[in-house]
Each structure stands twice: as structure tokens, then as C-alpha cells.
Length: 87
Image (tube, rainbow, N blue to C red; front, side, top):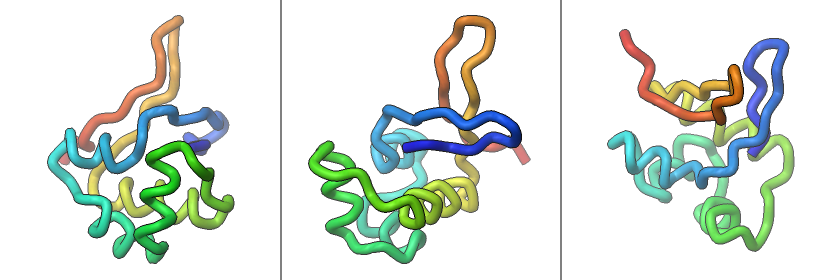
């Protein structure tokens, strides 16, 4: 999953609903509903059977970000990550 963080674009290799579940955000169905994509889109993406079209990837990223997930770009030799945004 490519994520645009301002001037930087990087690939998210962790499955998005695993991230969401780990952070206590959503199930596959809830993510699909929030992103307005089919459940099959999420399931196929998570099982590495198919990467969603760019519009669906953007919708998935935005849905996660709207739920408070923050994507962290790689810095100083450290890999990318995710965390819940602090309010």
C-alpha cells in the first residue's frame, strides 16, 4: 500500500486491517464500509492475492487516517510504522 506523507511516498507492507485491529480501530467489514470498497477488496489485499486499484488504496488509507491511524515514514534507517494519532 503506497502512502503519501506530504512530499514522501512509501509502501506500507503491513496489511491495513491487521494494523487497524492491532490499534483497536476496525474489522475488515468496518474498514470496507468506511473506505466504501467491497469486503472482497480488503480480503484479497490482505491475503496478497490482489492489490487494489489506486483509488481504492487511497480510500483505504483515508479511512484509516480518519479513524486516527497515523502512517510514519522511514527515517534514519528505521522502517515505516503506524500509530494512533494523539489528540
